[in-house]
Image (cartoon, rainbow, N blue to C red; front, side, top):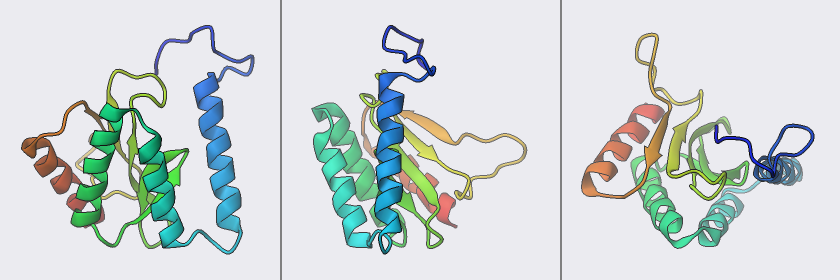
Length: 149
């Protein structure tokens, strides 16, 4: 977690964290209205990516292309205001958090409980992502394929 700063609210959440929770609440309300359609989820993800700073946007676009190619059965949607990809049960498998979301020095590729990445008693579920390269693309592809296997 980043160090607390002057923007911390009395409840203990930063303004960025409060904004993310409000975005998630809006997402849940939207899903309650006949469920979010896959096309709507895709558009919401593309809209979120378009709002990002140029460096984050470039990474998010590559993550989106790679995830959708490696796991076409995952459905795109926003999750706490971030691009995410869900399985058939609607559970988030993988998400992308841009560095600007919480003022981190790196973007994050993260996996949730629905991802099949278990490896003994300890395994990574979050990866710092600063630059895209063929090696990064290969590793992301491997992780996503393992996550949905």
